[in-house]
Image (cartoon, rainbow, N blue to C red; front, side, top):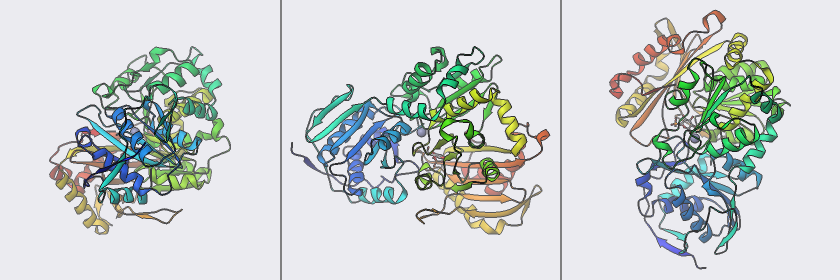
Length: 544
Ligand code: G1P
Ligand code: ZN
């Protein structure tokens, strides 16, 4: 079968953000837009001819179309084989698992994570390398450079391929293997956690839980793992039927968007444990009865208890957290005598540390937790980790977190997001903070003295690459911090994120509500950054 060369012109807006290229569906629907980006990915790679590519996505609108486009282009560009999840589906962590397990050259993941889906929603595409992780910056930069000079792409003139029936078929010289999107991932989870013990807890009659897949990709994974293998009853699983528009919702597992689950977990007679995952299955939210565990605390608790879980019984090598994530995990690393790394926002920055064996657990405040088992954050993995802890410790979620704070102190933490604000205003705010920079040092705000202020820059300890302008940090002499940065995943205007953190060692003061405990810092953030003035908003859109 001859490949077809299609003449095209560059789109100048195909710069990958924090996690691949994300745009409105209608942007992707422009003729040649998707094809240009896919060819730009291939053009940025070397020696992929004859290799294996993994392909799948979160099932959102345009996923099915994009899968067919990519299969034809992979064939025309000379890949030997594509492993595609049945129905074009693979959660982000499952894609990572499959790339690693089968030694694939890389993978293409179709997802805009938790961003709303459907014809009016967002679509996204990202490239993962052979280690299963998101392409590092030098590759995303190369893809972007290719996208700005592309003038042709290769495809085939063929009918759609059946991706709904498992098994192998041919498309020209390309072999296509349609795989069960859940099986390899479920097997990996079973190898890490004590399923017998979790099964015993779930079936003890003393434990009730809820899992909310938010109409997105984790539905089938939850059915196989939680229901078929661990024995939860079907009514435990909420919204587990994936939909192309995610049921019209915003599948971001946080206190605002996962309100259906939050209501259940904060009712009287609430279940013992609640969890949710996002659009593509890499995020998680952990709740206990009337209790919310911040992702930063979750990372710290998992690290402190990892020895209780079979997959980590040998101990953990180190922990990495993104810069804005609270310093709760630092205290655990300190106590365990292991390394702690502070990286820029985005999972791709953990890849080198994981590959080099320097860290075992990683986490981001943005509801992302994971380990060296794959190279993406992993929602269901975090849920299973917590279930394993609960099964071993047989304590409530709130008792576990309270005793953790008693031992390590509590890092009160919150993130305030101002979504879809005017991009110029947000840019000016950041610009001003950068200008103020070191001059803030020594200034006292409401009794808090600024100890440092900088624009975070990271030098990768493994390959020496430098990433600058990763967010403005203002640190106070009592260890409190306020961090400002602009989102790299939004698709409308700009999203300003403000991260607030304060340490409290005294157990009698640790039960305060976080917003109250952080009230001083919230006021200081406004005073320094003039958020109202620059965003035209009185309050954040989302508080987590
Ligand atoms: C957000 C999160 C970040 C996460 C990314 C992809 O990026 O803040 O931690 O890695 O989504 O899930 P942001 O929009 O802040 O650039
Ligand atoms: Zn996601």
